[in-house]
Length: 89
Image (cartoon, rainbow, N blue to C red; front, side, top):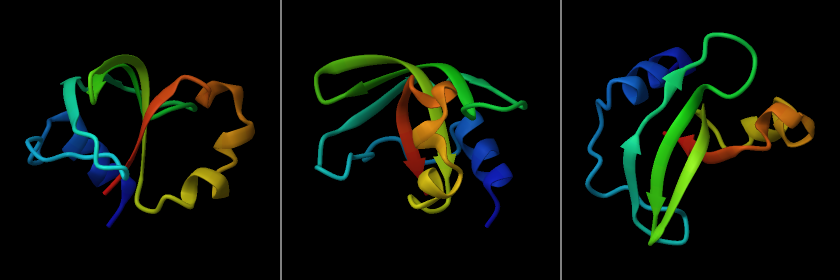
């Protein structure tokens, strides 16, 4: 599977959004999936997501494997400091 396909799925909400949970089991509600970024930086900007009872606004980064966050050096890149969801499919 390629990340471009996952971007398409996220952009058009082509997934079951009823049972999305954090790894700790908190419910995630996607209110606004954001605008697809075709340049450097997070994959989507301007997303609004509710995690548990907290509302978050910011960027979304999508990967196939969670280890890609480190492999792509996002942890040291200031462009990724406002990522509110690191989606793994």
